[in-house]
Amino acid sequence: MRLDAGVAYFDNAAVAPLTAAAYEAILRWASDISGRGDARWPQWRTEVEKTRRIAASLINADREEIALTHSTTEGINFVAEGFPWQPGDNVVIPVGEFPSNLYPWMMLESKGVELRKVAMPENSLDIERLGNACDSRTRIVSCSWVGFSHGYRVDLNRLTEVTHQAGALMMVDAIQGLGMFPLDVKATPVDFLSADGHKWLLGPEGAGIFYLKREHLDLLRPINVGWNSVATAGEFGHECMDLRKTAGRYEAGTYNMVGLAGFGASLQIFQDVGIEKISQQLKEVTDDVVSSLQSIGAIIHSHREDNHWSGIISFDLPGKDPLSVKLAASEKGVYFNTRNDHFRVSPHAYNSSEDIQKLLEVLSD
Image (tube, rainbow, N blue to C red; front, side, top):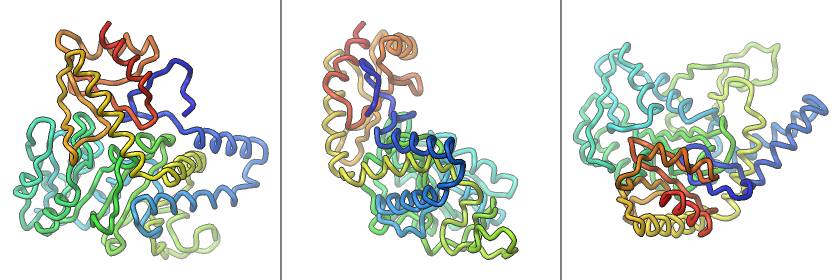
């Protein structure tokens, strides 16, 4: 990482710092585009496909099942706006989802689609409640892999099983889990997945992935098509509305070339190191953070069981206002966040014991 000297960063669940590899890739792109315009565009276009390949490998998907996107929100909207809804259909989500996994479904009311928001236990998620809210008209169950405020990690295997038993399809907002935990979409057969790379994958904002299970390619109607959606992309004088036979049909126009270059460079790091190793290191770091927080009287709200822990730690410090402490800490180069009136720290595998000590010092002031 290239963090400034003295900085202790614990806000990866918001926007993470870039890897050195991503930083260098972005500089190379900037040098090329400023010095030669698009003369080397074909080479950078090749990098786009490398990014797709690594992203697919990360979740054991086929390359044809991956679309490169600008945000998690974009991928969720591909499903929300492209699904063949009928009046009376419904979508099931847990209460407390991030707005990106709420508003697209709310917009379906004009199509006669009901949104069922299912109340959840505090700081966790009850899969059976979601299953019980489904009926014969439930088409989609949409849920975050990891809760953005409390950090509870849902059992995707069980959630997908319950969803499919109800006759519905599974949409996963994976932004708070991808990069922290291994995922094999062939073993855990989610139907759709969306995630940006600017959190736990340590990439730039505006570059992410959408996974579409191959069998659903023709189920969704692309709502945003352009020159890049078709099989003859680049042949601008040839009018042929022959959509690509891959998830690439959702890549309607110009790529965020610089973002995808940086994203691909960071993904390469994760592939080289291995998600399992990163996850193990992150568990050790977060365990140290939790133990240290408890030593100063913090009340931990996040679940820490083996199947439900994540890199997000929600807690309270009796007598201390989270927002005020956050602002004071930032002036000393220690960065974390607040959610739902609680402290939220989100370390990554790169955080050191020195970082944790700095965090304790600002929290104890």
